[in-house]
Length: 497
Image 1 (cartoon, helix red, strand yellow):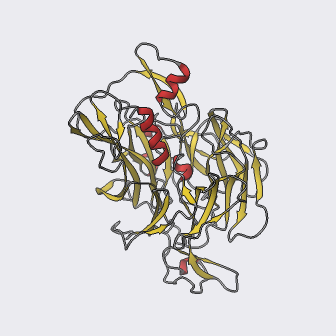
Image 2 (cartoon, rainbow, N blue to C red):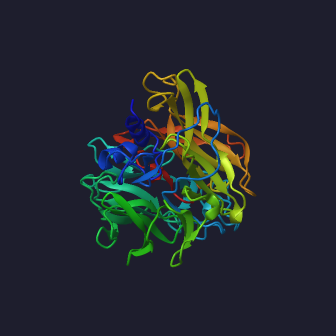
């Protein structure tokens, strides 16, 4: 298996590349194919979807263990280091002022006045005269049995997926508003991430519970100055952020008012936007790493994270930023480790490192992808991807072929406990789900959704210990196959409480 096949498999199953699958390149082989052999002493690297030359660096042999904590690959901006918790309008459940979700005792179907009355996994909804506790929804992008893309929503406890658009139209990337009663998605576009046949489509929104009628258009390719809406984010922000696409490249971040209106550019460069609260966000760029910005203000680089930091994720309690950063001494594209910048930019904490274990003919290595926070900052979840790195030849994903790790899972979701006070890891990482990817915590921290074999799994956990509670809820395919080819773009998104 060539490295191209390895990366392709990872894109399709793990969504591990920082910019997803597409843009100018997916891996170094795209660069070599399009731009020719690199000059002497240089090699191509695919960073932020763009081909870049760098000095040749050979990985050390037999250095068993962990990667250094310096330097991340930074494809899209950074978030700020100062902190406030989310301020955008969720329905009760974060009422203590510290971002901690209040869990009630109301069972499904019980009367309620706010979500704080409801037990974990439930929110208060309905008419003013008859509000009851009901199961939270989860939204995701899937492919139907006609090979069309579909933005889909379902109750987490009831495998009854509902398509957000007409069957005749592709739809992608559903995102919730802070109140959890409206959902935006891209409609009428091809699956972005390919270099041909790409159509921007329209950014639209509709209310939940769903009612008959066409969704409201918020922006299209012309008003949004883009050939595709990428890395779309809404909750907990007051507006929607997306990354613009221009040909085979990304070209910065724009903002769409929640009810539509004039689209405005908020950054000239960058990707992977992550809201901190209603109007402050982080993002990453290939040259600076992570930056933070307030809507209407100038970005501030988060220098402590390193110039190659990427894929920032805020937690909602204390402004800690989770981010990835590669080790350039490792195989290109297979070299990311996970870090936290604690409150107000104190020392960076290493959460999960690159690992290597010697085997006959080479080593079995792992790197980190698809990290995310529990809402209260007490846990992080991430994917550890494993591959055989031969002494000679190209890396091969575990779980396939005839490598020494062919019988082992190629990727495993891990959980790790975090001290919310300073961002330090507590105890060892805990294996959570083999052969799975794209973990996503429920807003109350009591459930984890993830994708396995194209299906949605939802596992209840004990948020104090991280232990599983009962068996996972499995949503059968039912004509839909969940997508994983664009990393965070395809992560299942929970309805806010």
